Image 1 (tube, rainbow, N blue to C red):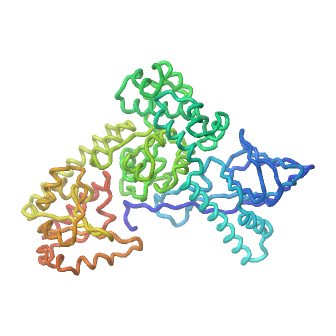
Image 2 (cartoon, rainbow, N blue to C red):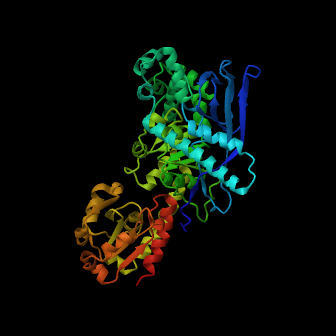
Length: 550
């Protein structure tokens, strides 16, 4: 996209750092692995065990194991069945050459995890690692290229299996018990009760729980309670005693003790220490709000990489981008690795991806922001309050409202004051009339232009919540204004051919605005982003558009 308000995001590049062949026998029964890179292990033959932290995993023929970076692992052979393994270290490189300024990195599913991944029987991958080892020193470029292809085939196989695993959820009973804890953390919770929900023994439950979450049940419960306490402290809506009771502690003294154990500071120290430095936002426009307030988000979780990077705004330096379709496990892993202090998210966006504040709270406190219920100005105020930058937000809004006033006065000198304006959006599968959000905010609110009567009624009824109305082609005349703005969304292949059926229809040709040549086509990238800086840019574009049209 050739627009400064949009940024691309890029996955890292994978390379094979080294590959080794390990034999564990009676004379050399133990191997130690401590790499700062992700390690892929495949059992070629034999039996043994893998010891990682306080867990032991049995190794069998054709088993494949993915070990997170910076893990200390010990391999022990079964003396009756000598163990032969291949280990491949995987390095990731950030893309840096020929990238647009401010381009964001995307997290690697393979290399960003914090938990071990076991694949019980993958003979094809084991054979592929053996071939990579045999040809680790290629004699010609053809073999080198074959190695590259083979390496990426291995990675693709792993990614496909990991995605299938996340979708299927191999531990439904354990997941139910964890969900119960997340939904009832303010009540009395016991490991015995949780193990009953999971249908496993108490001792086995604790082991499985740590494998799934990285925490013991007590640690996880404490994180849920302390993070909820942080949320209430940020909002400033309750006393410390009220907060203690709300999160499941008997009094404020016990809360303070637990709070300090987990964070190293008291609740009062926490409120004094803010503002935050490491914040994640779920929905790209919130990143623009934060950057406007002088704080670059650490992580953006979104289905698009929209953000503002324009004149007068610093370009992002270290933002990581995670697609919102990523598995909950990956999202949690990346947030934990980044030591996120606060997640700003709307439950609407979380629920679209099968998540909720309850499910994310173990990672960090959640500042819940309403999406459709609030307009962009209220979004800015909410985020500013959460990160303690309200004064900056109010000053910016005051300056912008003065710009709106001046722009509205300029429009009053044009013939537009006697006309009505329709905003038509053509998507591959629907036809929409836009309301008071996105481009509609600038046209109807900032400039004070009049919408057609049917749209005016909806704006009066729903206010900032009225985004758009889907209509049939035959209804176009009911929403016709004396002027029309048209935005065509391309399909997934980038084509806008679907709009031709609209423009060639008798319904379109019969509109007075079409007959009078009062149609203006706008670009999606310039008029759809809904955040403070984009709205400000749209105001300037709109003023230039209308004052230049006679």
